[in-house]
Every structure is written in structure tokens, then in C-alpha cells.
Image 1 (cartoon, rainbow, N blue to C red):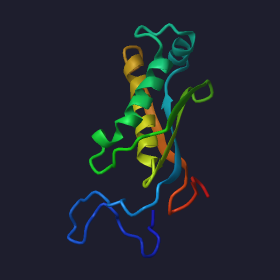
Image 2: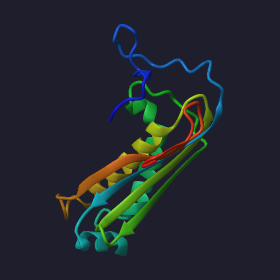
Image 3: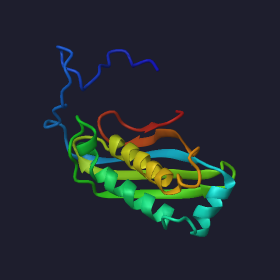
Image 4: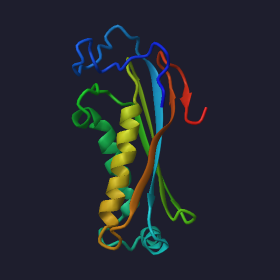
Length: 164
């Protein structure tokens, strides 16, 4: 994907070294990010999840909590992310018989000087991995696909929506 003219990688300094971006001069504004991913599996495994009969327990509930916890710990996992006091994290996991599988969507909100895209993407990734972990005993061929930023609002760069 091409970069906009005049844009630069913000986590690389003039010497080419990795750096944490200084956001101290940026105003604290409300920022929201929504990310999504899919966990593709067999219809039989999906039925096991939906019926609540998975051996390890409540797959979707556990994945939801794991995703929320991951959003809160993003700066511990992604080296150059700022630690943020998140004001909202929601994880919606929707079983979809047409995939078959689950659609995982995270919404993360903060009032601060930097965005929450990485927190939303981390939440989705860890929730998808948790679903995989909880069903791998019955289906190792489960696939995690399409983890991406759906939408971001707030901040200097404005509103972004995938596909616009």
C-alpha cells in the first residue's frame, strides 16, 4: 500500500533508529478504534462452541475477557506503544454459520494524546488466539484471518474507515 506524499514512519528517527513518539504536545481528545478478525473452523466445532459443550469451558466468554485484558496490556506487548488509561473496551464475538466460525470485533476508547488502534487490534488478535487455544484439541486446522482496523475516530489524522 502506498504512503501519502510527505508522510513518514513515525517510529523511526532521522538516524533510522526505532523510537517512541513524543505525544506530550498533542491535545487529549476522545479517540475510538474498532478492529475485527475471524476465526474459521468446521461447522461441528462451531456447534460445540455455541452449545457450550467445549471441554475447556465457555469459549466465547473466555475469549472476550482475554481480549479485554490484552487491550489493557498492549504497551507491554508492542514495544513502542504508549501505556494508556483506556476508558472503554468491548469485545463482541458473533458465531457465524456461513463462515463457519466466529467474527471478533473490538471497540476501544480513550481520552488522550494518542490513538487506540493498536489496543483494538491486540484485543482482536488475543481473543482469536484464545478461541483457537480452547478448541485446538478438536480442530487444529482452525484459521485466524482478516485481522484489520475497521474504523478509527478522533485525533489529528481524523476519521478513517476501511474501504473508504
